[in-house]
Length: 207
Image (cartoon, rainbow, N blue to C red; front, side, top):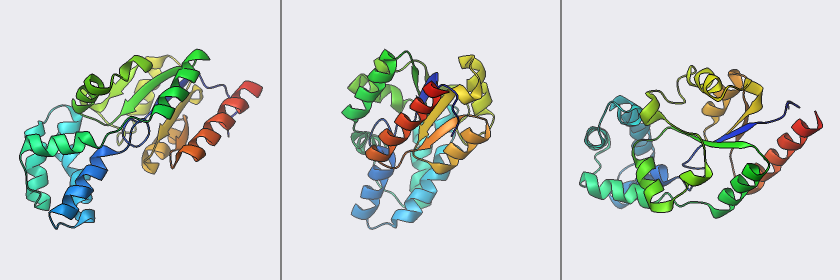
């Protein structure tokens, strides 16, 4: 664990700031429609990129068409999108922790592989006010699968890599961030996250 002080904490949205509505919603719909959940998720992980939806050059319609063709999912675009968005439930305790970090002078931002849905979710739940900056793959044209993303963001923040902490629920994203010199937490649950971030922040302060 680095003892370098953390100046910016970037958090993933789905699965960290909020419950993972995308995965949970698709799994629930797979069960209801008699489809295989694992197949559904494998198709989804490819479709968000293959359709270009998550990178800003594809449309919501193209994404759902990929899902229908690959998994057999049924439903209109509006119905499917509504079902997924309902599953993103903001975690109030996480917002409280973010506010504490803000009060300590730490930059808190969002780093999410998302579409314009993130804007819709903010219109519903008003959470952007707690985060600055907001990095969304839909507007950046690249996501966390691209190792170049991390040095790009490091430059935008004008920080050293080891002054940035990523919190993400996908292990491969954590590993790519660490390979770029960032500190990172693989989010598993509330207790584990709170313990880890406290240790990292205390270690940095002591350094």
